Amino acid sequence: MTEHIPATDDPAAALRRRIDTLRPHAARIWNYWLGGGDYYEVDRVAGDRIRELHPAIHEYARADRQFLGRAVSHLVTEAGIRQFLDIGTGLPTADNTHEIAQRHAPESRIVYVDNDPLVMAHARALLTSSPEGRTDHIDADLRDVDTVLERAARTLDFSRPVALMLLGVVIFLPDEEDPYAVVRRYLDALPSGSHLVLSHTISSPAIPDMDEAVRFWNEHGIPPLTQRTPRDVARFFDGLELLEPGVVSCSRWRPEGAPGAVPREVAMYGGVGRKR
Figure 1: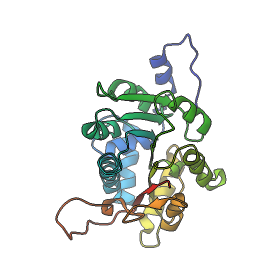
Figure 2 (figure 1 turned 120 degrees about the vertical axis):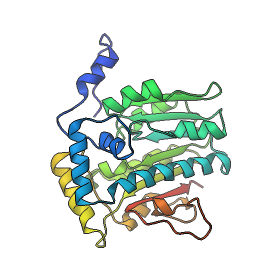
Figure 3 (figure 1 turned 180 degrees about the horizontal axis):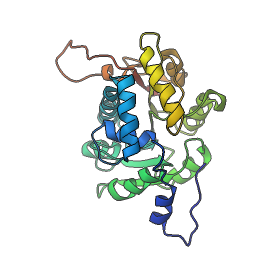
């Protein structure tokens, strides 16, 4: 649950007090794997240990980021989407959602949502907008659907199609919280023509070392995560028109490069679905 900052408090100071530097955090480790500099020593140590347990893990971060870029570019140039609700933003790095969208359509509007204090501190400083468009930031939890939608409506027009971006974030919703119902509540609030872009790490008998890395993370890091099978990930798109090639390894969702070349598969699956 999001901590409410007193109106009389300095927002930046309040955010800094919420940053836990004693335990590794997923957003900061992701930033470390992507080559960023917004992490602490505890994150580097944990990130290196996870990479020892599962050496391919850093490839997931890159594949997921590239998937975001291709998906956003498609939605803007081919589907005509001009509004994005990006939940679980993560620490800003190169080619964020608004940068890609506004590169193609400067009038695009983007709302970022995250409840990590370090993410929000950086987002407010770095995630700016083109003059023609608009970018906003909401300090809230994915679970707080009503709060997110109410505040996002100050920037987005929910009578027009919106792209709901959920990259690597529903892994932090355990099964007992019914993540499918949470995602459905967001989609129910969006009009026809809206899209869901979702990615999720997967569990598979073919990659047992990934499960070992997840166990390590859940013992030492925050927040804990839940692994799901490719079939479980595909369930998030039930009732949507799933765009080709479906729910696949992020590296293989409409990859760029030589025709016919098949990128190496990673255990981060993603897909894009359209609401009819």
